[in-house]
Image 1 (cartoon, rainbow, N blue to C red):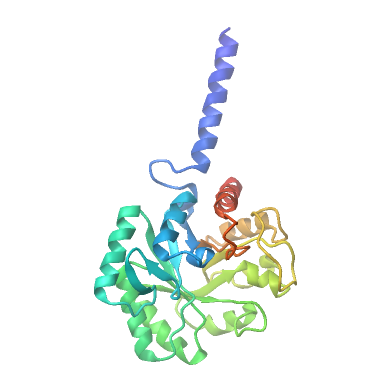
Image 2 (cartoon, rainbow, N blue to C red; image 1 turned 90 degrees about the vertical axis):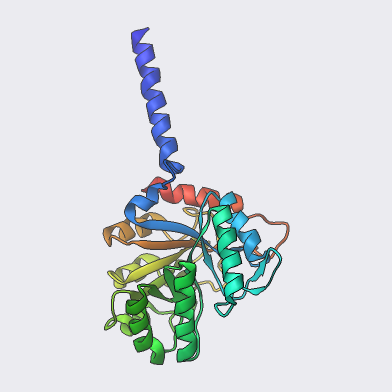
Length: 285
């Protein structure tokens, strides 16, 4: 009987440990011990308003959001989540974020076309508590971004869309940022690398030491521009190696979930896929 009681006690301890590993404990997620914060890239829910997207973030079991400029705000507010919104709208959004316990941690893809708007963007990011700006800047603005990133203490992550866009090749990104402050680095969009025919693990190794944020995805194919999202661990990205490499590089930053598959289909709900994908990532830790 004592042996049986001991076995049950051990089993309960193991189950409790496993549950604590995949769920928040003391309001802290397990990945945050590594300096990682998992956010929803709001374009995942672009057919919804930003305020509705915040509810999706919570439904996914997360509390961080990466907004993009073109989404309607909603909640009785006019306009979009563009950085040129007025101060009153900013405050109303901050109040909603606080009420829903969601932090607007990252912003992009956003790429102003003049110096004045770059300054305005950094002022906006500072006011909203945004820690990382994801962008595909024209090369002539890189010295200015370097200056602003250091001045404001806000990171800039150069993002890649699929080929033939300007930054699709990580070698191009590395060349652009090599001589800049470490606050200016790369946003690794794993899905777009795959669509461009690139292996994510190779790209990450090339960018070692300059990774600022990640758009985490797993696709059903490599080298197919029509490749689509699948649950993490079910596709061709080899996320086990990806996560291992990120840990090796002591990455610290935002991991944005951008689940694009059927996102405009009103019959499709990506929340279960995202919840299971995040659970898979945490299991790799």
